[in-house]
Length: 270
Image (cartoon, rainbow, N blue to C red; front, side):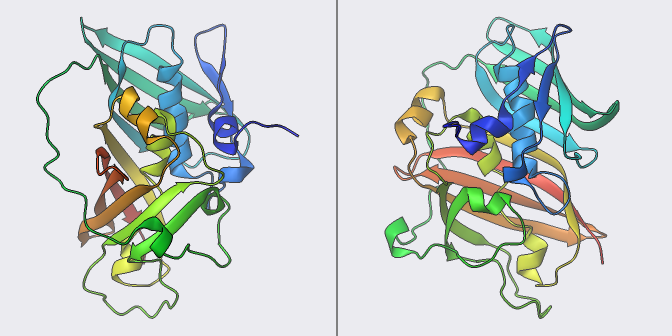
């Protein structure tokens, strides 16, 4: 039996002679259609993290989901478009059976010590031990890879369609089994939030994230000190209109450090 963590197995890539990377979808992170988008984004980032020309650590990542991956192998190509003294810009593309399924860009850089402050303060919520773990049957496999404890805005249990007036959720989360945090896993955890349209108006409409941008406020040392502890996630939509909505998210560690923020646009159908 392999001792490799399911997430490490899911994002593993093999360098190819042409400079691309070969990966494979993971049944452990299956979604309703194709794999969990957070893992697909993490695989794209991992192609840069493993690239021999990489400079520094990620500052931001944007991925555009052109199509859902089918179960099976895929290739990721990461190309440094420009490298400066302390910054680096990347172009990323994931293909499967010759078709593009993801396009992306990444911005990497060498961080330096400067003045800093977190203007978006971590909200006050009960401690993880005081919030029950979300349980019960799940519709998709990837949800089982995370321990989630909702302090506010859990996924609906009744799909009655009445407007709830707000879409915000707050929850403690960490990987299950626990695993030390790194940039790839932080990327995936930035996408664990269920679509806000289901929270605002509980109707199980089809949805799909089209584009997601992740901004990394943590450096490698902060991720290391966070370890496998809980993160507090907060997410909320801003507008629902004409078949699309956007939602933002923030993740703090238990020491109240803001680690990452994200913004995504989601398609929904009625």
